Image: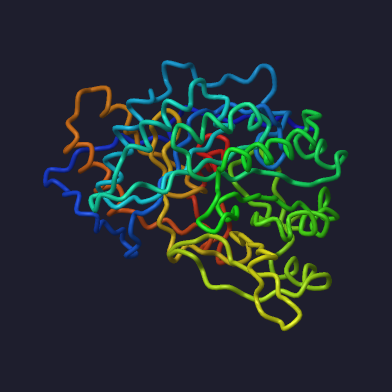
Length: 385
C-alpha cells in the first residue's frame, strides 16, 4: 500500500483581514449566493480514539502522526469570544465536533460558557455535540448539567464484528449503545413530549463494509423516539481512499428500507437542514410519530449546497466555509494580536460575504480537483463533520 501523508498546518490558511469599511453585525449577513449564516460547527480537538477508515485511516493517523500542540488550540475563552461574534452575525445553532470532542479536557466548562450566549433577540442557542459515543457513559450527565441540549452519536452498525471493522480500534458496539442509554438517562435530546427527537444516530454507509447493517439499525431504533440518519460515504479530505462505487445513493437506501417498513416523506424541520426526513407510516399509510423517523444525508448524489448556512471553525481557529474546502481563514491571529471584537466581527462578515462555495453541486459537473483548483481538501477530522 502506498503511503498517504497529509499536512495539517500549511499554506491552506489565509490571513483573515479587517476590512476598511466595517461589516456591521446585523444578523442579516449573506454570502454571494444569498445564503445566510445560521450554523457554526466548532472543532475542539483534532484527536480521536477511533480510526474509522472514512475519516482517520490508521495508515495515516498512526503512532507517528503529529497532532496540534496544545498551545495551537483555541482556548475555551477564545472559542466563546469568537462564537459570540458569529451569533451577532446571525448564528443560531452551534455544534461541537472533533476529532472526538469528548477527548478535550474539561469540555463541560466550554459548554457552560456557550450555553450562556444569547441571540440578539435574547434567545438561547441550539447547542449540540457530535460524538462517537465511547465516552458518553461517563460524560453524559456532566454535559447535560453544563447546558448541552442535544447530542448526535456516530454508530455505523450493530454487529460487533462489523462495528469493530469500521472503527478499526476493536472498540465494542455494546459500549456505544450503553453511552446512548446514558445520554437518554441524562435527558440529552429530550423533547417537550418526553421523547428523544434531539438524540440522533448517524450511520455512514460504505457498501463493502456495513451495507448489511441498514435494516438491523432501522429495526433497532424504530419506535425508540431516536432519529437514525444514513449518510452517504463522502469524499472528504485526501486520506480516506474514496471511490464512488463505495457510495450507496440515498434513493437506493430508501427503497431498501421500504421493502421492510412503509415510509412517508416529511417536510424539513429547519431551513438549510442537511437531512431529508422520512417518517414510519402506520397501517393507514400516515406518519406515526410514535414509530419515529429516519433521515438521509445525500451530499454526494443530491447536493444541498443551495441553502447551506454552515461555517466551520477548526480547533486552531481557522474559519472554513465548506466541509470540502481547501483553504481556511486565520481568525486565531486576530484573536491573539489584540484585534477588537468589532474588527474580528468585520473580518468574519467580509469572509462570509465573499463566500461562493458549492463543492458538492459542482462535483457532479466537473472533476473534484478542478472544483478545488487542484489544492488538497481539508480533512474531516480537522474541522468536524
